[in-house]
Image 1 (cartoon, rainbow, N blue to C red):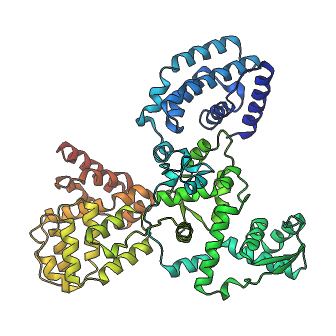
Image 2: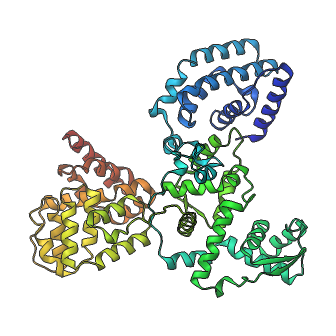
Length: 554
């Protein structure tokens, strides 16, 4: 977004409205300009055309703006005001203004229907429309503590019960806190100030020259927030403007686990409640508590584009500027981390926020560990919550440790009989970790058509008696194992292409896969056809996919 031209346009619009005693909905016009700049290549007021309004009001707004259908008249009125402003200031001619008015007249009855059409919702709107802008309003926390304006129960999303969360092991949280850049820098800044005999301003801030020197000499990215955190945590004390170490000052490496976690709780509270300017992006700084609360409640990464759209909604027309830089600052603070799917809380931030919520008297429940549930719960957790590899390994090991090999095999295989390939594949890979003690249970599934090939492979790979796989079963299990990889291939097509190039099935096997009565055979073959580096094998996959579709396999 070109914020500069939008700001100039809004300043001109305000002056224009005052001169003509025209009531101007500045926030709504700003939103029109913001979205025109972002999505329609409008780089100055003179770039507006009649078609710009049609795309804005019937395409961009329904996709991006979280607004009820009844708000359409306000937006249409703002569009008409913008047209008059463009005409009066000479940005457009009278004929263009006539066409714009005609376009807006035609749009007016259509826009409420467009805003209500959920099929038009974009990623951000779909993600946040159920939450609502109120959940990020800066007075949400106050509303929650006061129980709503009338003293009754508040039903806004920001006051809804907190969802159960899974926390990383305590030792992992401690290790992560040791590495938080902001917390380390808070200690370094105090030491640097004290050893240099430096003083602060009468407002307790770093002197400008000292802040610059601190960055140059120590490499501290944000010396002022690090200093304010040090004061807040009691790492430093002031005698007038002279700096001394506080009573609780000690290097991070010398602190015990409980003491370190207490320091991190204080850091989280400072960041989300008292920090003030930190990232340099006002909308993010003012909404620090609500953004972290949003990530806590969603428990899944939020795409940065979606977060930007949502912040624009709750910012009451103020521009959202360099969001990437602001989020980098939060990464420095140790509370968020970028993922392939968007922005998420760090494990130690999740732990710390739950501590804060519990300290406020809120019910902050913990989700049961997969090891405490049955096989279906374990598999669902491994598939559904995006568990990291390390955490998944820990969950599987803990679940298996509570069962004998026979019990584990019986639970896992019974839970996935007749299940989709992805679910069945997860169970089979866990059963593959079990020793020969589970042989009797695995053998009992030789009569199950879908599990039989896997059972044969399991038995034969351990040197146990097992029937030979028929050619049809070899084909079927090849398709089944590839079907297990479909979600990973969609998430990381390049990584899948590398793996399949190294260990993919040969062309002669692919040629016959179309004969397999497997529900995922077409999708598997299409994936192979688009990812195999071996051109002969890729061509064989595409031909086989065509044959499978011709058979009516879906």
